[in-house]
Image (cartoon, rainbow over all chains, first blue to last red; front, side, top):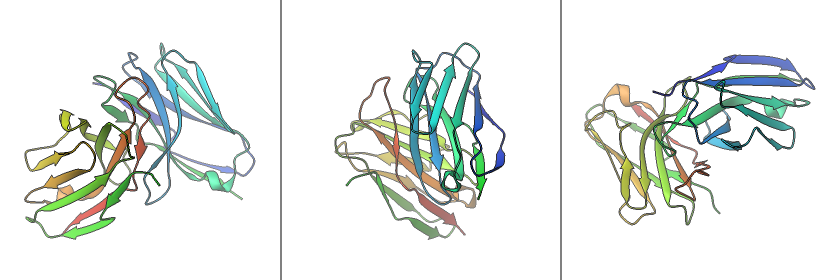
Length: 112
Length: 115
């Protein structure tokens, strides 16, 4: 059974800092890994999807890396802004590529 | 516009009642997913549709939960004899392809409260 862990559970940083969020998974036989953002009381917004054949994906100030063999992914956020405050979730397929297992998320607060 | 939409946004019901939650996926998306999210947790998979059929319903917690997608577009999640433990946010997502590149797009969710 796929298990997904995100560390830290919560993070508070001053505006402008670069930061790294971590995601680890137990079954490395994955097809892809997706990072999401969730604002309070809202649904999930897809940030980046990395295919298993890729090592990283970039979108603006976000960079996600994937190391399948070690069961790890990181989300790097450059020059953090207060608008980045949200919960960040990673998700990987388990038991096929449609059934997805989510981590519990990292709650990020960027202080102005 | 269109993103994934879900109705109602909030539903309050009494224990033992029946509820229906609706999801309108992005037009043309063949795959549709239901998740349940409890406070402080990540979403938990419930069921996945490919077209009209439920391709994987292994996440449904028990037989009080049922979902349909009769025309391969709109889906309804049905919960019978609701219990207080069913209180959660129910999220729907859709994706354009059934293959490896299954980037999922989520709706805003329905917050269900069972009193």
